[in-house]
Image 1: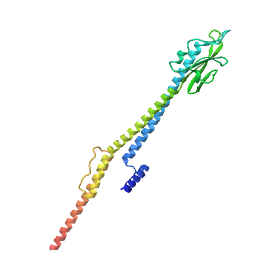
Image 2 (image 1 turned 60 degrees about the vertical axis):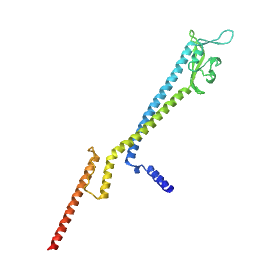
Image 3 (image 1 turned 120 degrees about the vertical axis):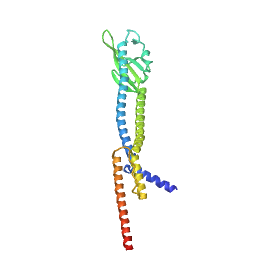
Image 4 (image 1 turned 90 degrees about the vertical axis):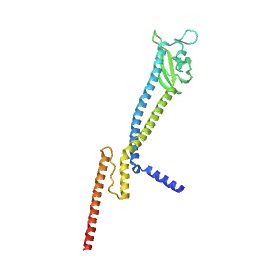
Length: 266
């Protein structure tokens, strides 16, 4: 029993490994699901790339907009006596809403004031960088009256939530592609099975006729006049021809027997 099960499993695996040996309904389902998978992958990949680009662009624009606002409202004041100080709105108002980090430093690169600035990395005089999982924008601070550079401001936000959002989008796209492919497989098998039902009926009738050798039986008539209907009509015509030839043969043999009996009686 175990050996028979092993042989059946091996035969099934060999059949699966050779698509040409699959039943027609499996091949139809495989082709339809493969095309569906390809279309969904292209569509999902395109949508995913567009969504990813849009999310990152919006995030970068928010950071860029925030640092531009800071650079327009802040400046570093250097008094004649005492330490330098930042003049402008409280940095905490820019940090708390988005869990951001802000750092202000003078023209020499020395930090004057900061809020959660430990992850911003070393000061940069201007530009954009990504460091320690944060996107950081640096802009100059100018005196509004003279236009002289008084320092620089760094503003950064963690990219973790952006990456998480993008990962969730790709996960949803992958789930949609997988779900759509599975639905295509089930639908393909169902549609192919329904399409092959008339052929299965013809096959069963032909098998019964072959077993009983009764050519007077009729082939089932498909409800639709398509290729299957044409095949059924051709088989029916063949059966009628065979049945007619058989009747003629039997009639000829009957006449021959009658003629023989007549001769013997004479």
